[in-house]
Image 1 (cartoon, rainbow, N blue to C red):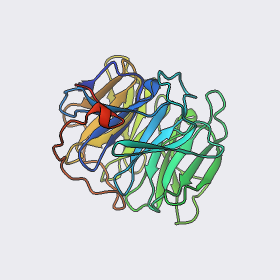
Image 2: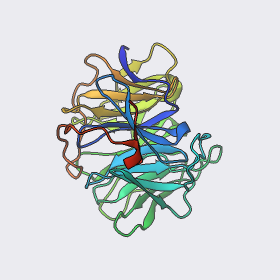
Image 3: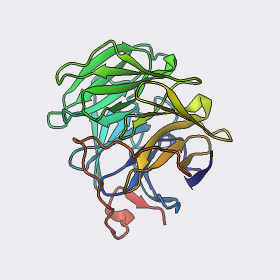
Image 4: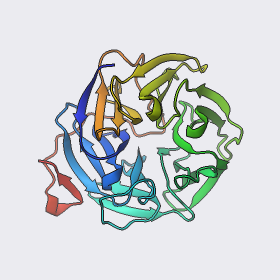
Length: 306
């Protein structure tokens, strides 16, 4: 599968996010920072230090960026900025730490249809059999456990109507669907897809309901029809360790993958996505990026790369 490298050598990459104002953000987990990467292939534009081990990213309804923070529990971090396990919020040039009681290693994060910030917490490496799905109310700061005793819950994504949560179950090699009725999330999820190799990490949906799953151990991205049938296997020609993926670009028609091997961020070439990515109706509408002057390093937590 052909792809274009957007950035490389930037640490253990994860959590790609295309924001409402047209920025591509990723995390460098091993370096404790969030990076803005140019979708045109011009490398890293800016970075902001979160400390610890940032993992997943999501955008809130007001444009704030939420970070799932494992506090360095998954792999060593170069950052000396102290931070506890939980969530973080990036508002423009400011980072706010939001420790979550009993959090161990939050992994992926998504904006829920109820306005809360949903995240997975699979637990510490080697002890992931009692993972959880949680949701944090951004107004009160209160977090609730929606599902518990899960074996390595990882990536998560909502369907177009907001009544179905897709959940990657890495150790089990499958993705499950859980019904959400506005108050309760069903414990026994239906099978959405079974991977032919490896286990799912980050996941995403397109507007037709197809499921895309990054499979690090398989060096591939698997694409499934809404009925669970495998319709495409996108193999990388070299060791890549794809951790996560997102749709990017003004039309959400470009598939960006974080490739931890080599600390890379890549965009897949050619017609690999049958339909654009899903932007749920409760998510912020996407709009073209507005040109902005470079941020001065002395003025903010963001550091310009050039």
